[in-house]
Image (cartoon, rainbow, N blue to C red; front, top):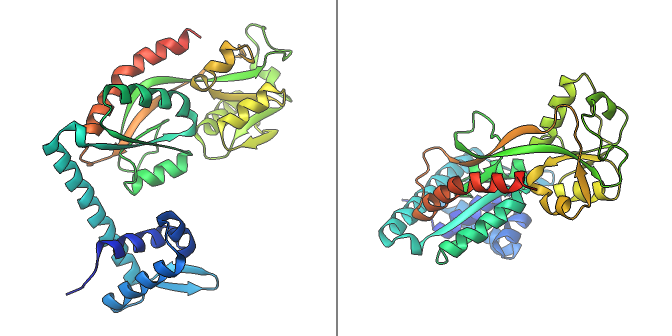
Length: 305
């Protein structure tokens, strides 16, 4: 019989995810020698090497992949057990981890604050990350619920749209196009555009609308978060395509404007997402219902900006 501990499996899972002892030790707030020692003891218990080193990189062995699969299954069972116990204890004993793409961080933070007022006993964690990181967290069950744009197909995810997400073209308040009506899309040709990194939902939407109008898209600058794009737009470095929900404060303050350009706004949706088959805890079920109820109200508030 194998004599393994949950702690050893937790350490192993961190090393397997990062394929790095140093990054795993940083995540777990342990010294690298302590992690290495625990992995060595786990390998001795298994009787086989779980990692192999090629140059400066480490990789999972076949045995390591088997242990990883089992450790993930055990972790999921423990999460399910926690949810079942929370069901017995009621909502007050729950905890909730919500992952949010950075584009949605402004309104998601407001949602979390309102929910906390209604359910102050629930332990809340909000993780703001990029789209690919959030998909990784969902795949590895590191988040209970996620708020993001249209999730990709084939990822075993349940998704429910709860609010429209208009993507608008914004410019500095003193931009020459500010105040013009019904601007032809062709006038964007040659103007400096600020774009998100390839793979982001906003970047994909930009590429699609430029293809539709027969123009190539080569952003003057690429940035990996909306805050950087907003700051660059404000100081006149170019035009930016952003979610209307991210620029409410800037529009109210008159620091930037939405341009009335053909084809905009690009209408998309915000989705509440979780893994298919995941047994949602009482707090997760409560938050899901709360978000679905709040979506229409928040949408009306943004239209009034």
